[in-house]
Image 1 (cartoon, rainbow, N blue to C red):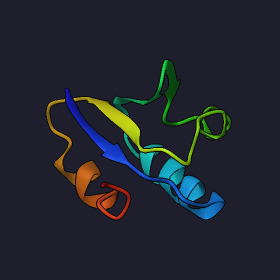
Image 2: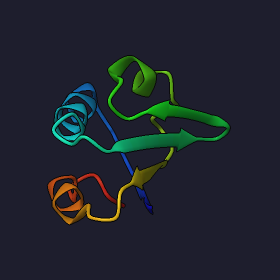
Image 3: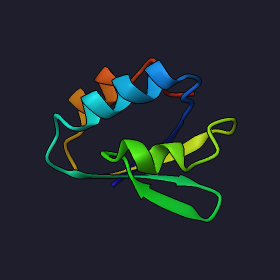
Image 4: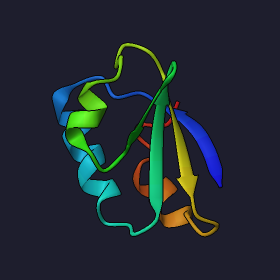
Amino acid sequence: MKSFNISLKSITDVKDFVNIVNKYDFDIDLTSGRYVVDAKSIMGIFSLDLSKPIRVDVHADECESFCDEIKNFII
């Protein structure tokens, strides 16, 4: 498992992030405060506080290509 923080500043960022996440078949969770949502759920992401950094937990050993695709969101 790999964890890091991201920032999603706009609706377009959320849409682009979800489109990238849905390409991969491993589980990815987003955590903000005490809330954990599936990163593939656009409605779940909008239920989080997007003004704060969001922790990403990737449940896969080989996730370099995913991390490379979302490097613009990583803080």
